[in-house]
Image: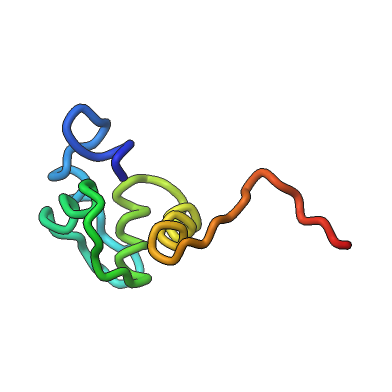
Length: 86
């Protein structure tokens, strides 16, 4: 979020909030929630909110899901490593 939204970034908070609408449910992100996301404040995460964030940023939903899992529960995914079985 911080790389894409906010002052001096590609998207303003207002523009992001206007775009951030989950296509399946119509769930939208408010400007205050968008501001909280940019500052790193914790918000209630739902699948609909993640869908809205993905649309607002113009990135794949999977990327947003992985970032949320890393930020909120500490799950670290190594996207560059290939799965190796022992």
